[in-house]
Image: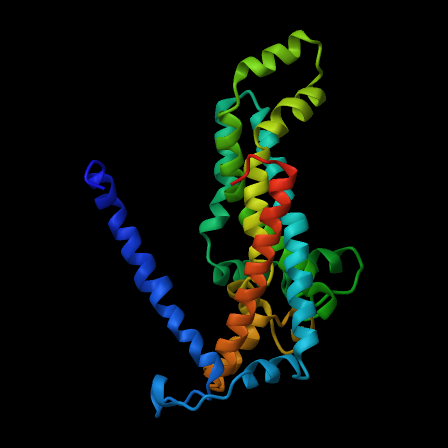
Length: 293
C-alpha cells in the first residue's frame, strides 16, 4: 500500500463512486420485502416477506412480460453480438486508412444519438401518412404500413434500430484487439500457403477469442435488460403486447402507481437471474478456454 500509494490515490475516486452509488444503495433491497410506505419511511414500513415476489410471479402479465423481455434480449444478442465482430473484421481488411476512418466514424456516431432523436427519425421514415418508406410503398402501388403501431413489426424495429445504433461502437473493442495480434503470425501463415479464410480462422479469430468470450459473458448477465430507454420511446397502446418488458412494467408500477416495494422486488429478481447467468457463463467459458478469468 505504501509503495503504490499514488496509484491507490488515483483509484480512490472510483472506489468512492462505487461505494456511494453501488454498494450503499444495496440496503434498499430490503424494500422488496416490505409494504413500503413513504409516510412511514424505510425502517418503519411493515415487513411482508416474499409477498411482492408472489404478486409479480402470479400476476396476470408475468408470462407476457417475461416472454417479451427474453425474446427481445435474445434477438439483440443473436444479431447485435455478432455484427460488431463482423464489422471489425471487415474494417481490419481495409487497406485505405482514410476510408476505414470514415466508415468507422459513420458507424459509431449513432451511439451518441439519444433514443428520443432516433425515434423522431423513425417517425419521419415509418409513419403511415408522410413517412418516407410509406411514400415509396404508395408510389409503387402498395398500401401503407403502420410500422410503429403494428405489434408484428415492433420487435424487428427494436432489434434493427438497436443494431444500427450500437454496431459501430461495439466494433471499437474488437478493432483494438485485432491491432494487438502479432503481424508475424500472418506472415508465417502466408508462408505456409494459408488463404485469407484460413488466416481468419486460425490467426484472427483465436487472437480475439478472449475478448469475444468476456463480452459474451457480460452480455449474458444483462439478458433481462432489453433496453428501457429504447422501448419506453417506441412502445405504445397498440404494440404494447409485443413490446412491454420488465423495465417498462416496473416503471409503471413503481413511479406511476407508487408500488415501490413491488418494483424493488422485480429489480432484485432481475439481479439474481443476471448473477446466476454470469456465473454459469463464466464457468462455461473457463471450460472452453482455461485462460479466461
